[in-house]
Length: 565
Image (tube, rainbow, N blue to C red):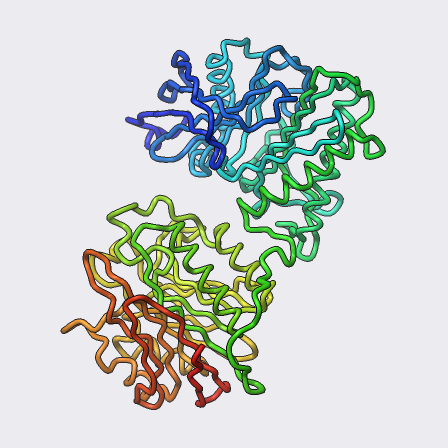
C-alpha cells in the first residue's frame, strides 16, 4: 500500500514543457485519457512536440511535466513514425513505438518504498495511452535525476548519425564493479532494497541506420565503455569503497534504438565508425549530465583565463575577498550567477579566500516569495560546481546559503566552507536565527571551526556575534581568525553597533565581516558595512549601495593591509 499520508487529497497536474533553450516551433498537443496509477490519483497529460533531434533520426521528443503533492514528475518521451527495433536493459528486445525516461522527485520514490515498481508500471501505461500504442510497444527507464539536467549529444560522420540522451546521478550509489559488494538477492526472503540509495545513469541511444539484434547487443558494451570512461575521467568515487573509482551505479539503464536507413550494421564495437560515434556521444553526454546533476567536472573545466590584476601579495600573506553583494530575494539562479561572477573577479585580483554575505544565494526575505521546498540536500549540484571552481583556481570559499540536512530534513541558514583542493569541508549553521525572515531555519548546534591553509578559522553568521558565547567558544577551540557573513544594516535597536569590536576585544582575534548591500521591500541594506575589527577597534569598514569587493591581505596573525583593486 502506498503511504496514504503522502498521496491523500493529491491533485496530479501534468503539462508538457519544451526543453530549456530549444524553443522554436509551434507546439502541437493531444490529450490522453486518465489512467488509475496503482491507487494514485489519475493524470491528464498534454504532449508538446520539441525539435531537439536531428531530422535524420525521424523521431520527435517531448518532456511531460507533472506534479504530485508538490513534487515534480518529468517524463522524456521519444516517438517514432514507424516501430523501431530496440534493446532495453529493463525490457529486453522489443519493437518500440515510444521509448521513455521517467524522472520523479527523490521524495516520491522514498515515499513509494516497495511500491516503486508498481508506480513505474503505471507511468508506463500512461505513456502508452498518451501515444495510443500497446503497452508492449513502450520501452521505459526510471530515475530520480532531474530531467532538466538532461544531456543531448549528437555525433555524425558522413551518412551516420548518433544521438545520446542521458540523465545521470552518481553521488549516492556509485559502484566499482569487481570491488564493491551487495546483499540483494531477487526473490529471497531476506530481500531488502531499502539500503541502496537512489542514484542512476540512464542512457538512451538513437541511430539513423538500421542495427541488427546483434549490433544492438554489442552497442550495450560500447555504451558501457563510454560511460565508464566518463566516470574515470571525472574521477567519480565509489560510494562504498574509499579510494576506488566508480565504473557505474547500481541501477544504470540503457536503451538502444535502431534506425531504418542504410547501411545496415551488424557490429557496433569500437573498431566500427558507428561504434566510435556511439562511444564518443555517450562519453560526452554522461560528462555533461553528471556536471548538471552532481557538479562533477573535468579538471580545468572552470579555470578562469582572465589576465591577473591587482598588486602582488607579500610573501606568506593570504588575500581575503569580501563580496559586498546585493542579492535579490528568491532569485536563486540570478544570485548564483552574481556570486560566480564575483568569484571570478576576486580570483583575477589574486584572492585566496572568498567570503559572501549571509544568504547570498537566496536573499534575506526569500521564504515568503518562493517557499523552501526547492532547497536541496547539502551539498547540492551547485555546491559541487563551486568546489570544482575552487579546485581549478586554488581558492577557498565561504558560501552562505539555505541548507537542507540530508539525514534529518531540517533547514538551516548556513555557510559552506570549501578548501582550495575542492574539498567541501562542511557547513556551519547559524545558531541564532532572527525573527520571521528566518522562521524557516532551525538553530545550529555546532560551532564552526575549519582548517584552511594550516590555519584554524572560526565562523559566525550575523546575529551569532550579538552575544559573547559563540565567539568565545571558537577562541577556546583554537581559532586564529573569526569570519562572519552578515545581513546586518545599521538599524536602531537592531545593531550591529559595536558588537564586532566587542567580540574582537574579548577573543583577541581579528573579526572579518562580509556584509551585504542592496534593498529588499522589507528592509534597506544599502548602508550595511563590511568591516574588519581588531582588539576592540573597527580598523576598516566599507559601504556601497551598489556593491563591490573588499580585499584584505592577512599575514596569519594581526596584520592586515587593505588592497585597492
